Image (cartoon, rainbow, N blue to C red):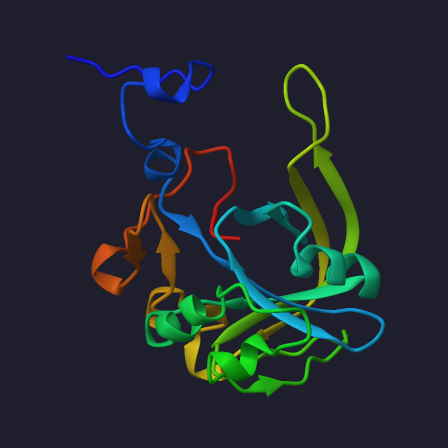
Length: 211
């Protein structure tokens, strides 16, 4: 028997007690965003509505105008550090709703490391990071109009940091870094070599499809 969850129905008339969307659109990569405003204030926060949107662009979605979004706009830059199994507690701690001006890095016991081409630092212990320049913020206006509650922040990647231990034969070994991803509710997923598999594109689409 199927379950049909109607998001337009009153909450008490829906088929499940919680919205299943995040459990279905899963696992999702985590954008661990560090951003700095022009005054030098620094913010660090994880976003699971995050992904690459082009060969050199990434985006994360903010529910409300939170510090990561406003700092990225003000400073015109941000960094996405890779959230991994070893850093899972620090990643989770950095999601705490701290007052503006209180350091998420300090609260989560995380050290910073300088970026190469942007002002915001990366998470020093993370094995990879994407340095981005802010391109635009797109208000996600809901059906029927009205003030948006969600905003899509888009950045262009200008430099990439990778710990050399995870580069093999000129390619990044994603599974060796043990990235974690977000599911629904309180669930996370852990990528390892045991869960990795490869497939080649059909002939005519190029000899190597790994880029």
